[in-house]
Length: 436
Image (cartoon, rainbow, N blue to C red):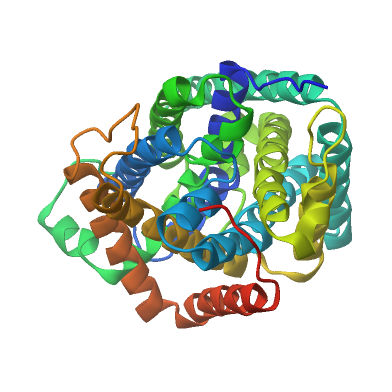
């Protein structure tokens, strides 16, 4: 039976929805712990967008040359060795999607319960977060047509709500906060310091998802032609939204009120619209995170599916229904996400996830140089714009960030390296016949 393919709007919706979620609505509070310059904070989001854009243009070349679902798993298997691909898939399965899915669901629950006068009991938050994941697991384990249509609707609503929120919040405030957005001599020291580099991990986490379309390449209509433009246009849209949102957060809300807080969107809504308006806006913003959890539930299990196809011992993960949907992989990822919700702290998972995902992408972008040297004759319908400057810029900025995380947050960094080591151990136990 022939299976349907994902349409262009569905996949670009997955890219945007994967990015616009937990990070942008939570990470500013953690950035403000060390940085109080409006210029430096907005520069963080601009640099993060530049990194994501450079990465997207590089992935576009890899995806057009090797159009198979699986993302980094497919790329690293083909470029380096099946062990590299397996470890990348292991990282994506255990952290890359399950962790961010859990964080997005927790943030959804936190925003949704902001309407309660006394807040919510921690177990109510966990119950709502787990309930959202279970509902979306049931939805995306069925027919692809229902799955794709739901994703597009959620993403269009997400963009519209963010734009309306930004305009309304700025208009509602008579006296904006005295935040400086023009650079000063002090900013030079800030943007070259360790705090700025570590804060880039939060930002990089917020941009995580720009590569989501590569996980669906095998289910995309004409991937060689459409994949590059999906990746690039999706990243540019999100970059504009992030800069607008963080400008509004800083313009409307006292910095001190957001320091160390997760629900910066709700705090901004409260400052702009008052208690009642803030609660309503918080509830609306919580709805946006449904799209994020939904997109990750679509994209992540495709990595597990491809691993199952290549490794006989894990073949159950490759099982699909009559519409080609990897239901077992979806259930497996969702189960891991629920486990994170029940056992992990928010910030540690955020830093840890950001570090290991950046390391994964670093190895993949480096692979574009390896592939050009090893297979110069390989058909490349799209070639990286401004090569080699684009991937080199990505590697330099990402490498700088990873180095400072190792120095400033060694526990999270070493834990991430431990996940990689465990993946290598599993590969030794479950050797497979990965495709060349």
